[in-house]
Image (tube, rainbow, N blue to C red; front, top):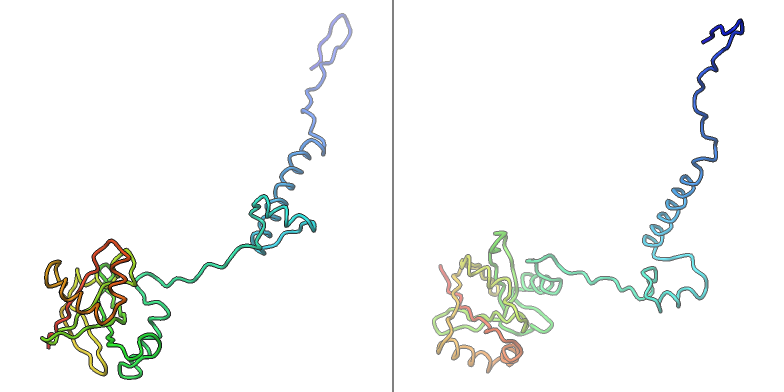
Length: 222
């Protein structure tokens, strides 16, 4: 804008846009981001590949300090079967049992063995396990919920508490049965003593846990 002042024309200076930042203004933050990205990628590679680019003495130093980058002492996690499913050993026993008319090898060779199929208390799915039995005078089968002497009842015991209808495979025969827990008292004590006299392991299991190992009678339905 121009105006006259005593014959002299004065011109107002034109408004100028603020100067643009030079190429080096944002270089520091950019470098920092790149450096963080490189560190992230380096850690990711270490965790993924299980090795780090270290100096010859750094692995010993890492072990002394407990560095998470030292993988020399890491052991692979043992495979555990899905809950409610028989383990690998039980699967082999079940397969042998069904292929050989109820006869199996290994620790169960010559033992009185059946396959017990229950319905999952929550899932409703069929669950099959091998178990020892003791035949009673009335034809029913006595089985133990020993669970190998663990402090918890086996899964099949929880299943029969919800659904006592079970399937029994004995030799070449398969039939339906009803499972009934033997209540604590004189009958249970007598049955436990008689069975433990034949298989000492059950007495050892009971001595090693505070829970009372449940006894179950399987009575044929048909």
